Image (cartoon, rainbow, N blue to C red; front, side, top):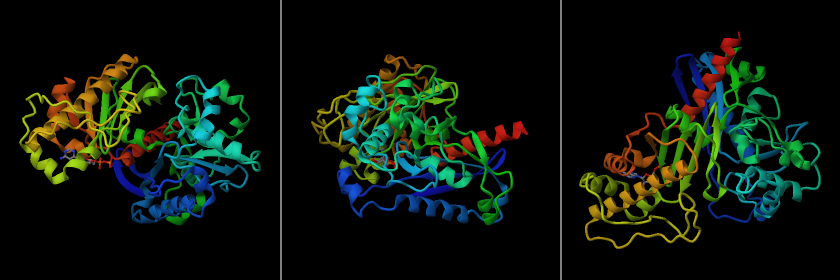
Length: 425
Ligand code: ADP
């Protein structure tokens, strides 16, 4: 799944690419997937799509493309041969877990570090390292965005500090930590730049084939969710974006860094600030289990958002919550159901708002900057009654973010890189 957008910003046209993923519906164990033919040729499909997107840019606009950046799904891990650039393994997708590597990773990393999760990039690397006998010497690790950008600029072994966080990079020290560097597989780690750093010009062959300008630069990217935050242009500490999609995710710009793997809370660096966040399992997916989108709209019209709902639910699709309460055994609570669907929906929306408020309060307790304004993204953002309920429950101004597309955020990074390049000249 891949989207592109052309956006006219102050500096001209930027090509923005958002790379998504899908995963076979029926989850198999990673060991099985590795062996089977089911391991779809992801890399080829991503490459083909990238170039079909370049092809799709209207010919008359191509000479105006000043800069390119790409965001990719965080923790999508690609291991390639550093000499040939050829893949040594099929990619590890973002949500694949490598529990086999977790005990090893936990034994070397500080307690509750971001890498201490089976889906972290480091667990994927360790799992590969322990399984693969050959090719270790020449191997190199890249993330999805790094790999796609490499196809465009041709310099192998570069990443950004947002993508590299889940492999253990420390964006505060601007280096990999000693406990990681002392491991034999540290030789696979890419070198890291700030997101939106101009890496170089678009490869000549691509430039001439497609008609992009001579000085079109390619910049380091970021992860999908950070790009979506950047799109909302919440640039001051205390500004936050709540994403009300299938799940509830909150992201807050903070002057201090906080981290706790138990709650899935970690901080991404954004220049001189920190983007802290957490994700709950509650959200729109539960609403969709009960109501259609049309019902949601109709019923919401009859809700009085100023009225406090007496109903107290914990809407979850399945057992288990991670943030703001780390409880894998938490049971969904959606009863008692009142006769009136309006009251029921009101109770659910208000309960989700309370979970959101608890999320921001937990981030503050952990040491993050106090939130003072919330922008909203995702399918729930259009529900004005819910926005009003959330304003009351959070005690904060809440509004819909104007831009929420990750591709727009990647464009802002491309702009940053183009500006820096321009200033240098
Ligand atoms: P995702 O990208 O995570 O799948 P979206 O951002 O597309 O999710 O949002 C879809 C969610 O929005 C659905 O789960 C649905 O319940 C919710 N949704 C749709 N319309 C409304 C509405 N009017 N009020 C509240 N939630 C809504």
